[in-house]
Amino acid sequence: MYKLLLSWRYLRTRYIALASIISVTLGVATLIVVNSVMAGFRTEMHKRLHGILSDLTFESPGLEGIYDPEWHMQQIREIIGSDLVGMTPTVRVPAMLNFQYRGRWVTQQVMLIGIDNETYAQVSDFSQYLLHPENQQKLQFLLRQNGYDPKLPGSGWGYRQNRVAFERTYMRELPSGDDSFNRDPTGSAELTGPTPLPPIEGTSATAANQGAPSAVMPPEDPFNKGGVPRDPFNVAAPREEIKKFDEMTDQYTGVILGLAIASTRYRDPDGSVQDYFLVRPGDDVQITLPTAGTPPTAVSNTFTVVDLYESKMSEYDSSFAFVPISKLQDLRGMIDPLSGVASVTSIQIKLKPGADLNAVRDKLRARFPAEQYPYRIQTWRDMQGPLLAAVQLETTLLNILLFLIIAVAGFGILATFFMIVVEKTRDIGILKALGAPSRGVMSIFLSYGLSLGIVGSGVGAVLGIVFVIYINHIAKLLEMVTGHEVFDPTVYYFQEIPTIIDPVTVAWVAAGAVSIAVLASVLPALRAARLHPVEALRYE
Image (cartoon, rainbow, N blue to C red):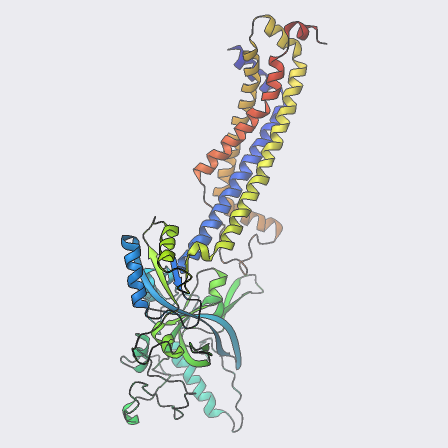
């Protein structure tokens, strides 16, 4: 009993112990806050990365792609077995995107991805990032009448018809010899035109966007200089039987663009952040891409923007564009004219939750060895390895550096205990002369260190958890005080700081702090235990 009483007395009368407790408290709280924020960022990043990427990618590095994907998919099914959830073929090719904005041509480099709208949703969460609710439920490369996200007012068929009517009226009134054109593509009320009509069912554009090769040819088609659409699979059809393409009621093959491709983000003078759209659903764009031949040649085609997607990963939103895979295969010449078999550049694979991605990857690599097949088989973590490794390394280094704060507090406890041993030498001698064993004297200081660690880590854990819970409110308060935003929304695509409180991490941090406090009291406790009673009583 005397050990606890003396430990409590030393803790209560020594105000220098309060400094040690504060050091442990701040160290524990800081570690909990940093780990919670980093875990939130890491989870959010993994979610967005994995939202677009499938679990496994089976791809060919060349432009020619993978011949006979059905045979490869059958082999993959046999290897993976019951762990397989879904597969879909895709075609990825670098391309140049061109569109007009206020009379000027804008050119951007994009990664054009051909997807099957029926199966692509089985391997990724791509549909969740689309801005039209109907496309989120079932993806179709069709221009919608309306109902787009509030950030896209006036988009769809109504906007397209108003734009076309305005352009035609402007061109009719344009003086002879003046070919300049400066239209307003924002869909504002100043644009006059007919009442928006729903798209005509059964048009060639509808057929093209349901996966069939498009019967709508762009005006620059050398075989269609008259502007009448041509069916490439029925070249002998009488021209009068083919419906003339009309932008008021028809669309080209649909394309879905990343939000950052179609817009720029600026801060208005009043401080609000807005997305200003250069192109929106209902506009037409030109895409130029290489063919699959050797050597490759450039081909161009006209597409109609039917939707935008926002994954909030700038790398994806600023570079990815999606079109129907059949259209892209046709443009690139990836369909064998003799067998009719189409090639693809990659096969996306989705596995059951909890499946071992690395084990499945190794099985596929064993079936398709690199010395025989020029394929690249990777998990989504392999594809983003450098980024994930950098985040993990940053988290580890931060933990090490911040844990040194608690280590500094440990040295403070060590110095404090040595001072107490020196000051209480006569008291220790009296205790040992009265029969207190060395182990009992040692436990006094160990209990002292344990108490400091428990109090400091407990208060620090509570403080850190409360700080994490209210971190966004604290960030807003800091913005009000300093006048500067903690996270600039023109750079970061999230409105709140993501956090995740992991109970295991909190427990390990608290246990580590208590351990440091106890270890810091070991040397002073050993010195006190080794004091000889006679020498201690003579000490002055």
